[in-house]
Amino acid sequence: MIALGNFTVLGLRLALYMAASLFIGLALREYARARVAASLGDPTPRLWGRVTVRPKAWFDPFGSGFLPALVALLWSVQAFILPAAYAKPAPIDANYLKRHPRDVVVVSLAGPVASLALAIAGGLVVRAGVGGEALLVITTFAFTNASLFVFHLLPIPGLDGGRLLALLLPPHAREVFRNADRYLALIVLVVLFLFTFLLTIASLLTGAICEAASGQDCLSLLHFG
Image 1 (cartoon, rainbow, N blue to C red):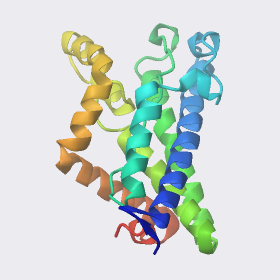
Image 2: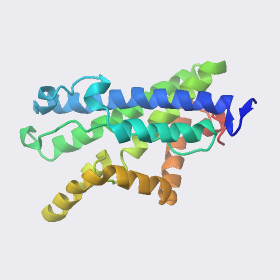
Image 3: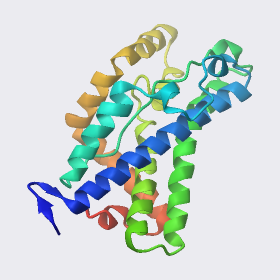
Image 4: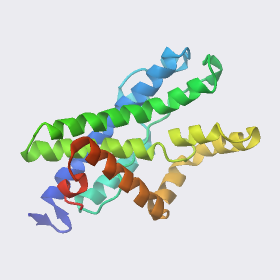
């Protein structure tokens, strides 16, 4: 394996494939969330131009820029960290949704379901028997989107899991919890670097989903196992 300082050619390739997978995964999950909200009667995402995959509509400087770049940097030196990223949330007005809270749950799950579908699709391609560099690319794609699925279901304000958790809280606590989403960037950094036990669980779930979809030990294929 060719190494450049702490960097390796394999690590740089993995970082590139992972970053591209995050970009595609974010675009499609945000499109799915906005599209589902619009189909359930909320015109807000369409009015704000969010029913699209164009990066200009959903790109968040920290969640879609700095955070993926940080993960890519660590992957380039083959230091494993769970792929994580988030986009600027599509504006949703729950007052337009006809069946509350069911429709809120459906909208909140639209993004994770899209990520899971992409992970399964990638896994099925791996099962079809791809080899060589294509195997590395598709495995990275499947693992990264499985990671997006797990990450966005974490009970963190501003993420889909946080929106679902808020539905279970009393009104005042729900309002406080939802307002905490303004600190999403800080919370994500704290989780990534301090709450390692939570990331360990998330990594195990991500690996299990990727393995179930592809029939392979994804972390081993990516040389992290």
